[in-house]
Image 1: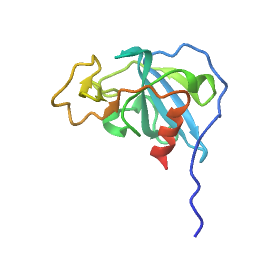
Image 2: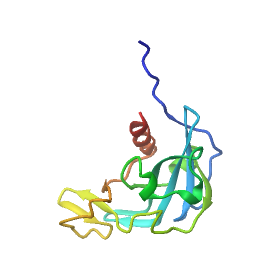
Image 3: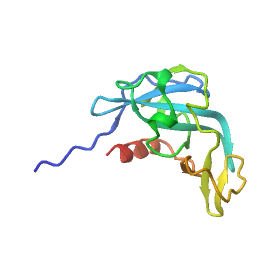
Length: 157
């Protein structure tokens, strides 16, 4: 029985140094030809010792199946919890911004939670005893370089 080939994020776009802002909807292309959506939920986001980060969502939705204005965490869910990131994937041609949208309560979570050694904290790094169970909990870590691509590939394989 042939082994199924792992799909990977491909360098499909022109490198970009454009300023990335909250509300930017971007795509990334997988080796199977599908373009998946991502969203910049916040920019210039500080989380503990991590400064001027992007807070990124990676939707479990493809550009072939969903229109940009239909994106919603309530309808489509995420491949993994909201995560910190930088502009590396845009600069290297892995992500491409399609357009900026106005962020709504349907599109993003009202709060964000992150795991720390001390427990779970909100985006202001206040410990939370009972986070909202409908909101996925991310890690208080900054993925170095292009490791975001590994997260995406692991989620889709």
